[in-house]
Amino acid sequence: MLEHINLLKNALIQEFQPLFQQYKNDGIYACTLVFNSYMHIECAAVSTSRSIYAEEEDRAQYLAAQDRWNIQKWRYTSPLKKNSVLNRYRYALNDLAESKNSFSYSQTETAPHKTENQLQTLLDAFKQVKTVLMELYPQPSGQILFFIGLPAQPEIEIHSAHYLNPQSSLLESFINDREPKLQAVLHLKRFKLSQSDKDLLIDLAQLAEMDPYDELHMAHAAYLLTLEASFAETNLYIQRLIHAIAAMATGSKDSCAMQKYEIIERINQFYHASSYSTQPAC
Image (cartoon, rainbow, N blue to C red; front, side, top):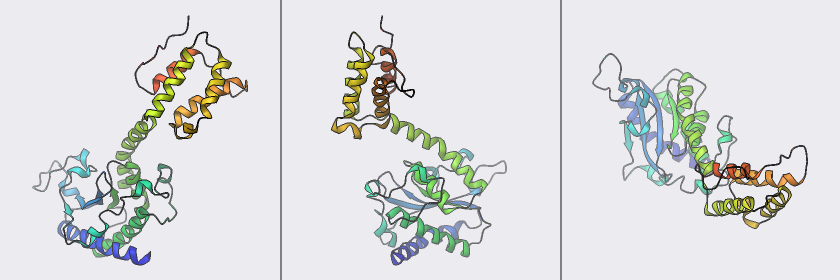
C-alpha cells in the first residue's frame, strides 16, 4: 500500500509542479485534481488571486469573484498527456460507487479513519503532494486550499477539503460555496423515485382511496406492504411513511392516526405535483 501511495504521489507531483512553478507569483489559492462525472481523472488545476477581477485591472484577470470555486471556469490546468505517469491512475475511482468503503456525507465533518479504498489512497497521496509542494513553494498555512474536484459529488469535494486542509477562512469560503450544492443533491436523492417506488406509491394511494376509509384496515394493509421482499430497497422516506401508517394500528402514544386526505397529501409530496385528490373525504 505504501509503495502504491508513493508511486501515485510522484505522479501527482509531476503534474502539479509545473503549474506551481508557472504561477507561484500570482497568488495561488486553490489546487485540485479534477475528475469527471465518470470518476476518471481529467486534469490537475490551480487558480490564482491575480486571475480574479478587481478594481485595479490586470491582464491576467479573467475570473469573476463569484466563480472563484467554479473549477469548470479555471484556465490554469494540466490535462493528462499520453505519456503521463498519472494515466495509469486515470480510472482510479472507476468502481468507487460500488466500494463498500466509499465516502458518505456523514464523514465530511469529522476526521476520517483510514480505509483501503481507492479514494482514501488518493487522498493520502495528495496529502503528501501538498507537503512537498509547500516545501518547494512555501506559503503560510491555510493560504492554498487543496481538494478533489468532482462537481457532480460535492460531498466528496467537501470531505477532501476537510481532510487535506486546516481550518481557515479559505476552507470556510469553499464549504459555504459547496454546501448549497450538496443540499440540492441530497434533496434530489431524497425524492428520486425508482419504478418500484412509484408502483408502491400507487398501491398505497389506491388503498387510501378505498371507501369507506378505515384507519385500522389502512394500517394493516400498510403493514403487509412492509413484509414484501422489495420493501427494504424502497426509498427511505417512503418506508418511513408506510411505517407511520402501519403504526396507526398500535394505538401507541408515538403513533398518529392519519386521515385519507393526509395520506394522499404525503404521497403527492414525492411527485411535486398532485396526481391524486388531496381533498378530505366527504
